[in-house]
Length: 202
Picture 1 (cartoon, rainbow, N blue to C red):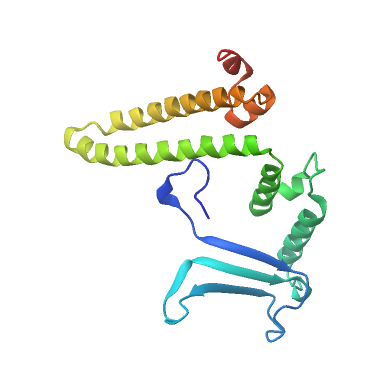
Picture 2 (picture 1 turned 90 degrees about the vertical axis):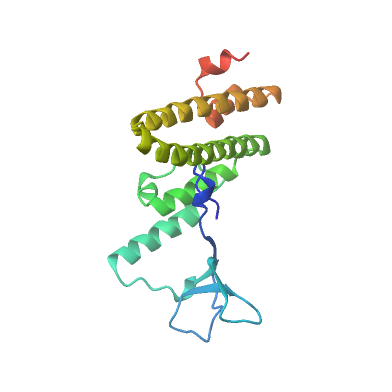
């Protein structure tokens, strides 16, 4: 799984696949509904890739035992049955759990057009590059700052540079989206710029 949008590339995260199985897929394990598999070398079984996991959940075997189990089961079942391409507003109870809220945001993102997705990905990719470069520059500058007593100035410079870099990237993306005649409302949503800021680019 990639790092969160806008994070440094050094913060790449493990990859997980989640399969919800509405059948008994593992009859040899009658008491287990949750199955986690890791990638293992076909010849040397002692070598595994820890950062890639495949998870299977057998829904028929799931029997909630605690209040928390039951609450989470209800939330996820509601997510699976209530959230679709026609959803206009999401119940706050569903968004109360961070994981369910993130799943809702992924569904929302899937409704974007190809142009919107391209713009969003390009924007956050540029933010990630910027954060990575700033982080490396800051680490080098921090060591020098300790020697010269300028750590505070470096921190302030990083903050200012990050803000200016994000704004400039947002302007660049807005110009590209305007060139393909994307609606202003969509450009505002993608870039975070105001109507007046976008109007100044026309």
